[in-house]
Image 1 (tube, protein in one colour):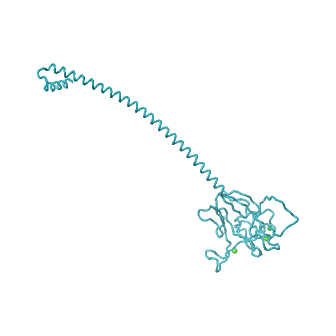
Image 2 (cartoon, rainbow, N blue to C red):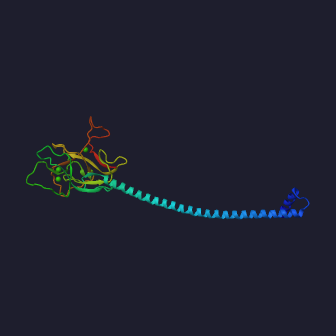
Image 3 (cartoon, rainbow, N blue to C red):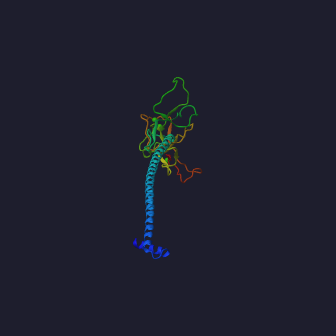
Length: 287
Ligand SMILES: [Ca+2]
Ligand SMILES: [Ca+2]
Ligand SMILES: [Ca+2]
């Protein structure tokens, strides 16, 4: 400080009163002290301003913290809300799938395959009584419910459209049915079941024992149909490869008989891939 004051004094005196050094030093000292006072006041003022700014900065930090907390709460709430919506959406899709689904008849069995299909009902395979006098009738097989209920009926006045059970026949008798079905089912009658699956579409494929890629196998077996000597028509259906039999149905009734369907190569059927005299397989597939 002394050096600064001295320099200041010299410069001051060179420009003003020369030869009066004591008076010059005193004036300069007063000026410097005054300037220092001013500087100190300004410094104090700046300190005060800095303190105020720091307080405002702290306040802003608190506000920012609060806003971050609110944002986090909103984000968490959004996540929870979105999760609930996604769960509701998935449940709705499941409900729609359950509402859609599809059904099929499993000929020869009283149960449904263990692949998620539920039993709608089981009963008896039935078809037209072919030894009746008429030649007109329904052509389709029916899966009659095993537990019938009746509306009004008359047992005394009757018509001539009659259905009966459907018998496993499979001519000729030399045919080893055990090799095809695991047991000899000849002359017994066929049961059936109606199965419901959540898969929306199903189809029976004649000529295959397994499904194409992407499809779920419901059951497989042999393509069967009516005796060719009947006057009226019927249909081809897929009989399960391990059929059951209706209890007490072993008598040789021949009211409505089931036969294998075989390929016959000639001018019309494409051979290969088909081969004459082979019993055609079948499969029911769903997707
Ligand atoms: Ca029978
Ligand atoms: Ca028979
Ligand atoms: Ca054959």
